[in-house]
Length: 540
Image (cartoon, rainbow, N blue to C red):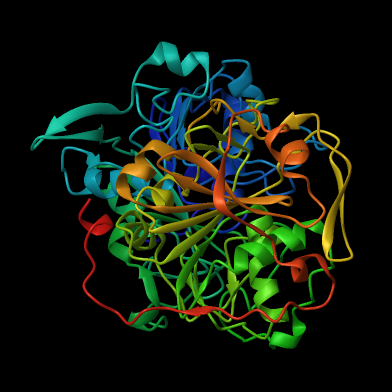
């Protein structure tokens, strides 16, 4: 059987009312050519209609690769369940999908990316859905928001339930059975075996394909090129022919947004460490440096977006490029995590692990530390990263944040203390606040609970918040200031500027003055303890 067909032909196999699973991570691995064909078919024929999209990570973005925006048409989409959504700077127009969400033209849900991959596997195995503690007491919990992103979703109803099982409280995510999966690889042979040698991640393409295949649906795989049957070595086949019904070829397929092809992203070459440019001196760099001081030598460290993404550059500058092993939710293990359009990839990775298995690693707390960012922090230490207070419909959503933070042993959140007109400078070994922000990012109660501080205290997690003017720890008595930047007044610049009461440590210290000077700080990381059988968090 010839599985190779055009994108337009493949789009005609998608029926009205189908559950459509999409494999992508923003512009990375995005089957954009195929999604565009689905949107064009609807524009010309009015079909397919009323689709439910199941997308564990964002499909496309607002910069160039459009992804889900091809489907953002009234009547085409009915419901979307996504781990994250396209996002970008507020200076650019909103993605079309966010316009639909804001106008209540689609029922939109935001669920943890790792849990969504678990849902795909459970659908494939005909299990009764995912039972997990990931998301308890966050916005995913139906006792709060249930992952609902707009009024249309509130009218549609719950997609997650609170249940009691074996004397404990859990979240239950019922299955969604895809009729169609649209996935992506690099090369397809004549039988439909798929390799991914030029991809920056393998994501969960197999899991989505299994969910569709075992649900009686079809799998459409977009690739860059084809080859003769039997020419892809067996160990290089990521998706076997038994899971692929149709192959769509896009010879212009790009590796990621605005990146035609970079072999360092796919692990085919190694970049010299000297090719990574030092991060210019700034207050962002001050915060990233202080976050880096929380790491341990030989630790396995997860890395998120925002200021935290600068920490690998800090380690390079300090001669510590390989001091930690970075583990990224898209699947890269080791190497140097990349920023910009290549975020989610790493140069010089030791391995590119399937994303669902990486999330299993995170959900069970197998790693040592996570470096993340925050939009808001409240009196209980809870963090909001999934909904902008000023623009609630224009955020990326939670992505893997909830999966990662639920059982992480140590988390370092980084960000600025205030927002809205803040002007600060690092000068002469201290911080100068020229104009403070109008809005405190430390509030009585966050507008969206992406991380539960209450649960963290009960689990005994080590939680640190690094800002430009102070460092705080989450303790049973509340948020506690443990370090203050040189040049900053505790009462005037911290306690009076916080929107919620803060505790002050009895052994309050000054932040290291070296952080606030341009030259390297001579970073020395504490040694990670020798491996031993661990209890506590892992059993919680």
